[in-house]
Length: 127
Image (cartoon, rainbow, N blue to C red; front, side):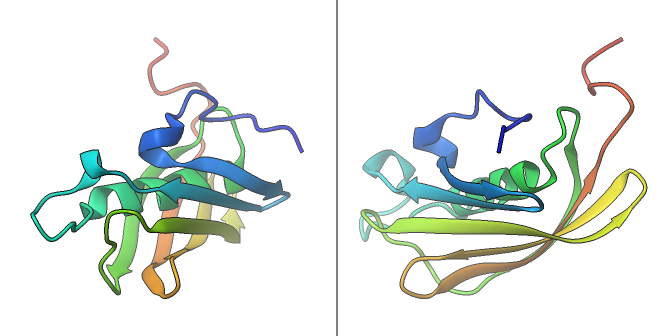
């Protein structure tokens, strides 16, 4: 399936799309030292969130899709060197609004919840 959005997303920061089908996407994020926030190797949660966001955007797969809001919970920490998989699955469509269920995991669930996406008529940066 052709990916129609977020094609320039940095694979090192947000992850790489490893699976995509209608209404579903899976992203793999390889954590690294530059994501670490302390001497114990804790990865900043923003990277996990970013991978989940990318999975949600690709699950919707529209060139203009944007994140409107998110309701997610961090369930467990991620440590440097772990590989995070993030999945987005369209749960509900209502016109231009799309609710996407997201889950990120290593050998355990690290984030789960919903991302609420919106598809404007034109790209948010277009005049």
